[in-house]
Length: 323
Image 1 (cartoon, rainbow, N blue to C red):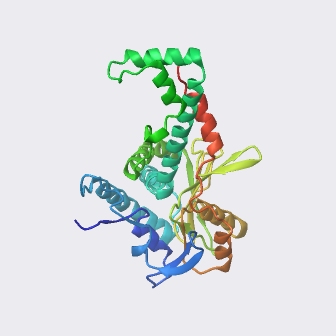
Image 2: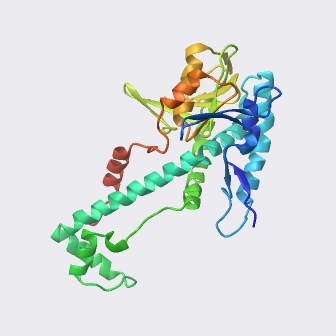
Image 3: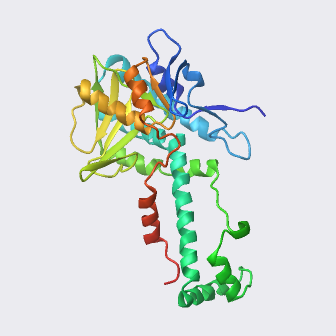
């Protein structure tokens, strides 16, 4: 059966970044630091990305197409007419943006990273348990009470816990389709948070915005620093979603004007976020040495999406065997 080409960043959205009258734009590739021109049709495409493993079920693809169809007229108004933000758009845009966060490979890889770290900490906890005689016995008694478990001795049980991955006894690898589903499970929560935010249309006349294969960016301040890529519920969270070279949609919990004009440093700050969040591809209407240099100086291709030590500490607090 033929492969179905699935755009994880919608083609209608990518078309906003085409130069006037052109069919190709510039793509900066983090993987090999290359720069090339290509059409939206061949950009951010993965074969059978949304389809079930059992067959060519297009339910998700059809649902996304409907959401995109509802959103496009709103974005057309923003991009073509610079129409100011109106709260009547909020529910449609909130749903589209939450899907834009969850459907891209970066979000899927983030889910897999969390699962991998959770498995690693579980193994760590098992090994600790094997060394604690009293807790081990209590845990073993709980194991034996479950009639579905294979009957083994305490010695065998301790041996397994001391090295659970030996000879492939315990293995874990999350499938891409499962990770994608888990990522989609966050849509309702994120959409509800977007509904609580205020939104503004940021327009530039002299500068230009870029986009990427993960165009929705969230930035939140923590003390003197900040985190990027998570923290939607934090009250100082700032959402940016470039709509075209001249227009960017911004969301915050604080009051915002429904339309503002921005230049220089502000546009640069949005573009820096966009470059950092890109999983692999940074996309621009124009070729720019400045953008090219910024992409090359952001060598985070296939790097961990979340701080692994923070993840491990969170799992260590929540993952408790018999105490």
